[in-house]
Image 1 (cartoon, rainbow, N blue to C red):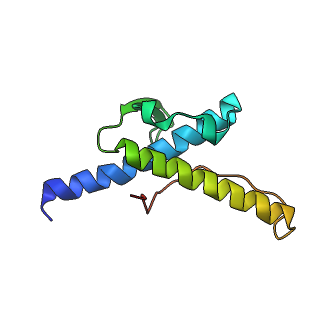
Image 2 (image 1 turned 180 degrees about the horizontal axis):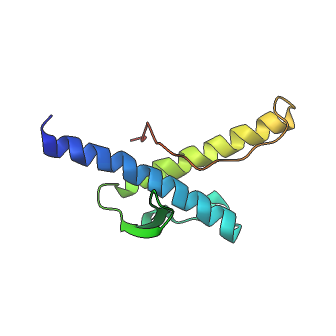
Image 3 (image 1 turned 180 degrees about the vertical axis):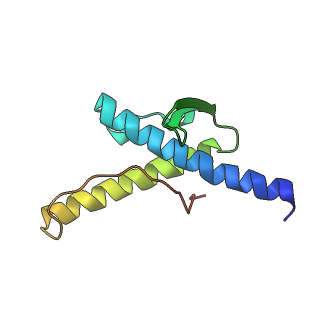
Amino acid sequence: MNKKQHEELDMLFLEGKWFYNHVLNLKKLNGKKLQDINSTKITEVSHFDKDKNKITSKLENLSSQQKQAIVQRMISNERTIMSLVKNKFQKHGQLQFKSELNCIPL
């Protein structure tokens, strides 16, 4: 893999993390369900830099299919948490913001 491909791959995972956290923020602020969020229309995300300054970035490397897969995984994770709470394997829980995204479904 050459340097440019490596940088694009790094940006893909970084944009995936930004997208995940942006969708989770929309869910928490607006009270929307994950199923109601149109992930393919999201082209810009807000996030914070290391000094806690708000930044808006354009998603250039993350495809619509990958965005949909990330949201589907979030829905699946949310259902799993709810079933664990219902079956009393876990007291409570909800999706948390991510500091790193290791896997992007295709």
